[in-house]
Length: 108
Image (tube, rainbow, N blue to C red; front, side, top):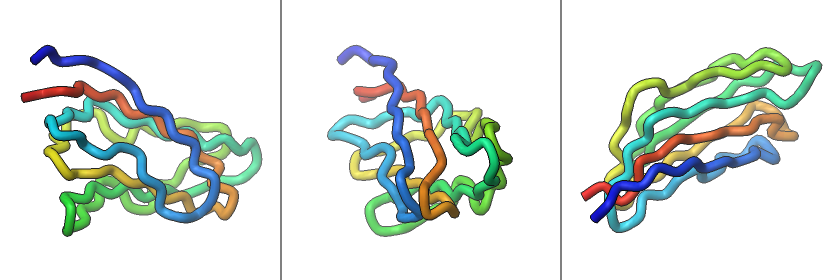
């Protein structure tokens, strides 16, 4: 099976935890995660959580992102096995955050 690169883009619309990626029947390797504060006036904080199906593991907790700024949350690689998911939550009721995740998908 061939490996394929792709990106996933998500805009957080509120302060609720939002699903970013859910691993399919094949493993995926996360090769980067960037978050951008889309507000020009308000700082936000961001939580990013890796869920293995029943347990939560924080990748980032209360990371401060200044207005109109980007933060590289993941620079290394994380394997997302079948059933794993990646979630994010902004401190802002309006979300104010765009997230882009680089993935290597269909890894067997």
